[in-house]
Length: 421
Ligand code: HGY
Ligand code: MN
Ligand code: MN
Image (cartoon, rainbow, N blue to C red; front, side, top):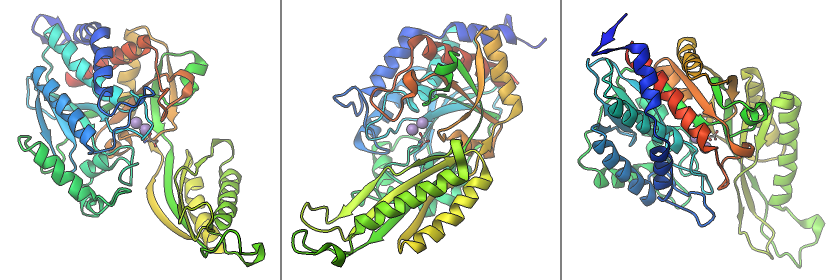
């Protein structure tokens, strides 16, 4: 039996879990939610926006109070490190703090704050782990300000992605390059890492954002993988003309084209993917967007998800042909294949749930997460807590306090055992 100080390692994991403090965790969730708070109780904190930089400043200060060091990298990822006894490769946890425009308080933020709560719990318990523990804050996971999503974590595992990312622009034409320059000016004191350090393991705690755990009445989800995702933008072109004078047969209405194309794309998705299909046409822009002018241009996004790689590839092929048939242009924005997580890390999470006597359900994630890229870098897995009503990407996003605490306790147990490998 390996002994550190007066305790054996199994005790350390339980002692760390027992020092998770509900009041401190819930208070940190409310404190972070204040940055970009919406009047309806949600949060709007775009990646690298002023509110995001303020939130980062709050978390960097919090990290220093916990006795941690903070560093960053070329894509503004933040790494909050609790030193270990040895300078071995760290165990990593964390998630993202950028939100959807009408997002909730928990998506991403809960995983970051629970990671910091685990550090506070280890400190309170006086536990020193063999390996360092790092909480990562990955930049632009949502991908709503800059496409693609999970930009920070993908650039961390593959730095060669950065040059292409720098020219990504938001709806106001601000490039990632400019946003990163503002970030560096705001945090000149943070040491920057040149490349991705090896990691012993990565465990991401996240809300499920769907209904499975709540429907099964189970408080924890052991996430075995993530379904695949494809993002595209379609552009339909018509001819602007007067709404009152132009006879219907004479029109080339871009919206009529777009609506017909949308129907064809949905039909393809459902015929290929069946009940597991998830297709969303979430972002539209109409030009000139005037009540009394026939649209000349309509652009809309497609977010397609499916657990089967063959279905995703078949969808790719068929939508290109479909766009051609409809005379529309198609621009692929983002693609990630389905991911299977590491069995050994899953076993650690499983052991933590058993140690805490907590029922757990194995499931695949419908949402993508930074863990899908970290899985290329080191042994990776995820842990879920239920979402009330399965709601997320919505100000009403919520999770029972007892589940938030249990998730953090299971994370503390898992991280402590991994940190003592
Ligand atoms: O879109 C997603 O699946 C993630 O929530 N950003
Ligand atoms: Mn998320
Ligand atoms: Mn999200």
